[in-house]
Length: 170
Image 1 (spheres, rainbow, N blue to C red):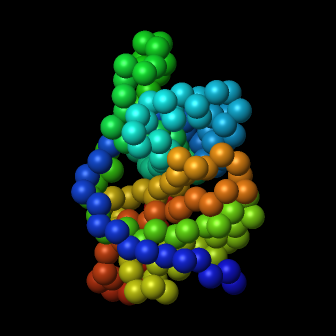
Image 2 (cartoon, helix red, strand yellow):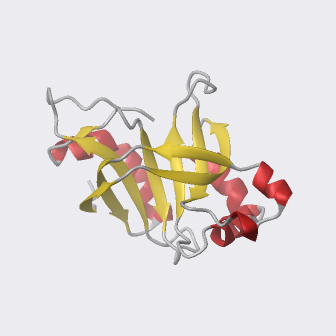
């Protein structure tokens, strides 16, 4: 089993604004946005912080076995994009939480194996429990991310376990 470097962070509430889609796999939207020019739109929209966040969440619009995946940025600079693009943007609120942040040295080489290792089990092994009050996870692509072989981060909201059981969400 691969070992991933981790860090913890405490983050206040924030919003992510970008493109969203109900999917069976976040890779569906990731591939579309990377190939059709919207990735560059997000970098522009990000202003000073060009980190792109991939938020996997559940809401009432998601049918069984699907979830919402949103690729977006914090604090968008709306004046940097055309009105028709602005109208297509979706904003999701991320509640404040403690987070375990896993660093993957290569998105392409490690993301599938990371999921096979089960992020819930990985945080449990670190002494944490999934924070279901937040109920989502985040893929974070740094401003330097330009190809699938580049590093990225996977963020899981956590809390100290109440019963020793990890309660997974998407």
